[in-house]
Length: 162
Image (cartoon, rainbow, N blue to C red):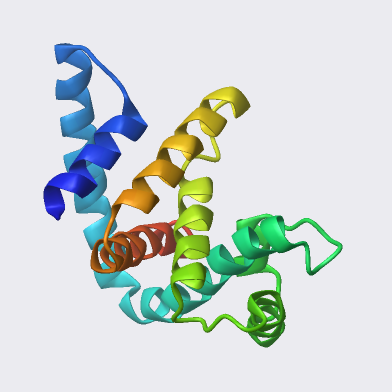
């Protein structure tokens, strides 16, 4: 399971070169230490943000596909601006007959989370990597997708700590 997740991350990153790998490893360690500090310092706020970020990811992708809301939102708007009750209602309307615990909702959540993680990339590169994400999602078990979504949202929520 972990090897598939690592494979997905390697495919998404698709970087090469030993010096870059060393720099990436060092930066990853620094980022992990900083993220751990943020989690400890803002633990309560982080725990409150996680479900909001997860719902925002799900709604973002659901609305992108199903177009239940005429407005186009960005994930960061949904997390930082929209009232959480309104966000929950919008997700419920978008999912319609699909439960928030359904395969469909989980896949929407993963797509939204990866969209947000790749937001800083040039558009063409982001589209290529999102295609890889879709392929990877299709090959993962529900448990692997749930684990990936949980980790992605947990990491993503750190960026909203203030």
